[in-house]
Length: 160
Image (cartoon, rainbow, N blue to C red; front, side, top):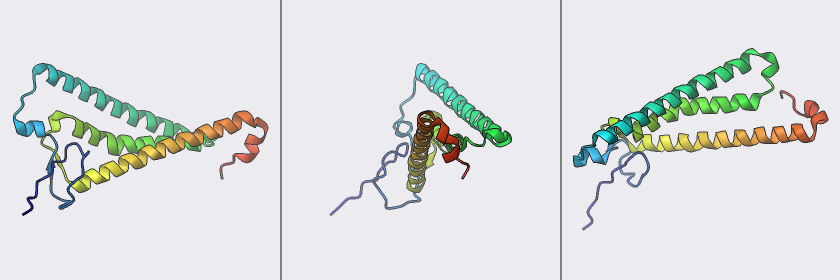
């Protein structure tokens, strides 16, 4: 006789049980075990959450500002790769960073994610980080071409 053991999903890192994609799994096992955090750990958690929320707000504000400047100034539209990087970072700030704050903070210990939500989060995380890395690579290649071939750069690098 086989016994099925329920699998806990903690912070969307382990996806071992695909039996039910819609079944909520607890995200903070320490809340279930009855471990009471000390005042010092609560302060650390609160300071960490403050910095994560501040970083998210700065990412939203800075990337939006750079996108507005690129769109409004016609002579800066040639920096399409920088605009693309801002769009990808803005998507990270809107979609990934709030979920990261929720999954890493003990203040949201009662929030339970389903297996499907965890899979979507991991997919978006990998996809947006890869997009960001590839965009930075394209910017590096473009800058290299600009430095090595400055006379041919304007002819080769057009808006199309």
